[in-house]
Length: 343
Image 1 (tube, helix red, strand yellow):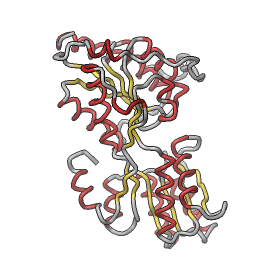
Image 2 (image 1 turned 60 degrees about the horizontal axis):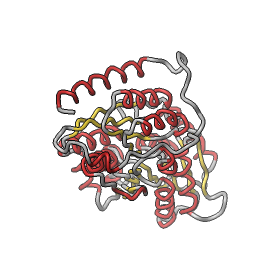
Image 3 (image 1 turned 45 degrees about the vertical axis):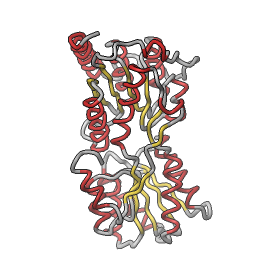
Image 4 (image 1 turned 60 degrees about the vertical axis):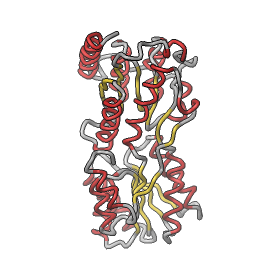
């Protein structure tokens, strides 16, 4: 398939993705919530290696990110940068609604892309379209979320961070900083990734069963989240450490600490420009950085190698991109890199 044919693939992909995004979850039957009964067939390396090495490839990236989420913008930049140096066109689509994301995956499969990169916050909802990708011989790499079930879905590998391990590291750092009672703020109840972060924090923090308090807040309403954190800090004055799981909620927690006059140590997952400035100003101790740029960049490189040479990176095991930590010692460097779109 030459470059002109790739144009037709992209046009079909765009049309199908637009159609999928235009349907509401209530207007059609949601994707199956059952796990796949069999592992999807993985594309053979022999067939992939026989592809024309000179043709331009088309890879679809389908994530659960909100359209304006700065975290996913960096992932998108990583994928597009890797595409530019690996002669691959990148079609990036995202939707935080699991059923809508499943339709986007189906659209990519129907467009017969050369490779698929998918984040999996809700593997059960994605099970059927991921099975169809395997049956169509489309190689898949999962990113960010879904590492535990990546192989089950026939993915070549997973690129991301173990949130349990990252949580452990955060808990250990806060314990070493002298925190004795830690508040872990969960902005979306039922999200397995967030729960793993708090679970890991409790394991790394150690102490008694009451030394780590999980607090659910409404992450979609930062004002309400701030009010909930204020109430908890007021009700539990022994709290001397706060761990948030996103950059946006970190800002709400910082405001809550200021409003209550609490001297609690604040740390967070994710590192946006506001968080980096707060670290520089001494308001946040550290940010857990999973290097999201790599989560976009590396899968494009891996898929390109697989399609053109039949080689598979990672040996089927997850390829970790974190955790790394943004602290006062390195925040200036990270802020400079943020200006380039790589952090």
